Image 1: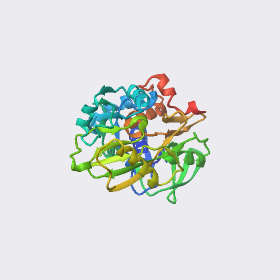
Image 2 (image 1 turned 90 degrees about the vertical axis):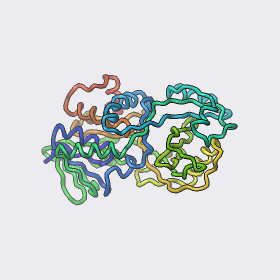
Image 3 (image 1 turned 120 degrees about the vertical axis):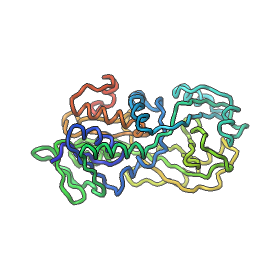
Image 4 (image 1 turned 180 degrees about the vertical axis):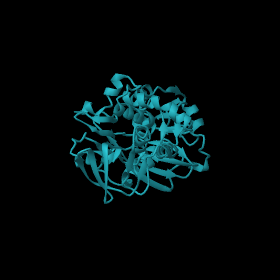
Length: 356
């Protein structure tokens, strides 16, 4: 008998396990053979405090100290680009992200492959940073194990039932028992809820694809910022001497081991090519992940209102990695009955009661 069973060995589950292991005995159950196999391992992770709705921004800001202390951040910067006919979308995004407008020539100096005749406006912010998702994930796993947590892989959950003391979970042909159940199953979180007899939260997984390209024109891309078209119609980001380009799509999907759609990827690469002078001649690798949202776009954290021993850690959307430290801390505070560090309005906007 454990105090907590955490279903899901991605960023959500391992960060929750790290904090909950300070409160009791924890077992993490992951269906795949590796931790962080799905969305957590497929993200072009950035730390941008102003990205997302207000409750997400609050979580991101509260996570900054942990990211710095863990050595997960490195300089990158962010560049927004606009072309002919895109003034309205450019101005709106520049205001939302708190960017400073710069000249097209300054933008081209930052990213030498930008086409000077096609860039009409540009805006910049130095603060967004690269976030080492694997370092963060493994750090949470180490914390959890140091506190006695057991982390199991290759144990897909097939049944969940009530017991006299809490929950029984059948996974990988074994029976696990705990007083409280934490649903950190990513795109599968509503499926886990149904197995447990708990009402789903209306989770919608959405696919996002990525292509890894050789460094354009043989340039050293190491110091380039992340750069993007208005309306998040595409983005590009240096990665290990290569360039990642995403169509930035958000196509609804069922929970599955996601893969890139060739046509969507081609259309996104064409949108990227419209801004640059170097054509895409080769894609070295491509992949996709699922970013899962509820209707208001914020995370769902904490106990189910009428079943407080069923705990949600879900709907991370595109923000789960950068918000993980504060999200896990909030979860643990709510479970322990402690006053959260976040303000009451933010907590209310993140807990599952808002969806009921």
